[in-house]
Length: 215
Image (cartoon, rainbow, N blue to C red; front, side):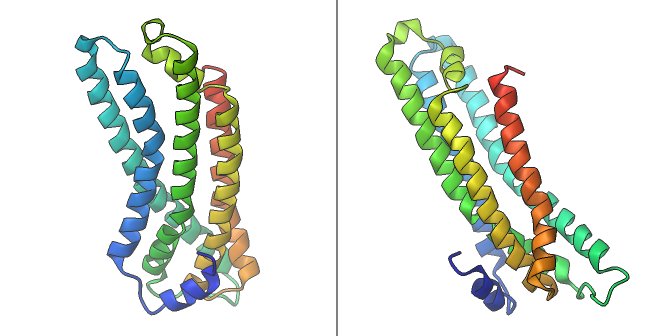
């Protein structure tokens, strides 16, 4: 995605649905990496009887993370499409026939930077939890202590900042996705893409602050 303008220009001739599903699925898996890291360390300290319960809960959480990315993909595509229709209605612009399908595929490709966000969060989680294990005996730890260690940790704070930058990058990519999906000016496309992008950044910050406050 170093050249989103050229990528989407070529994508007008047709993008493979499997290709886009692979990108979104990879983003979903990446978003689960930090949970996998945390689960790995939690399994080392929980009593044997609780292992099955914790593992089951972990698997459910991982699946929910992956599915949530697909859900956000659909929601963002719908929001962008509705915004495009609202802006073009009553103007000289028009939404091309069948553009929602093309937009959906283009928006899905924009999730590629989310893979980096997931890897970054996983690394931060690993460094934070490993520090906890290095400063305390395993017998003194429990699953809640590990989870609490992530709240307010410097590495996790940095992760939020990095994720926000990556989301802005995704918004930049989406601007070109909207431009080529509807054949409209980049300025208009950027304004449309800015709405879900800003919402994504705000949601990321709010969720982190809520966890920090124990809400």
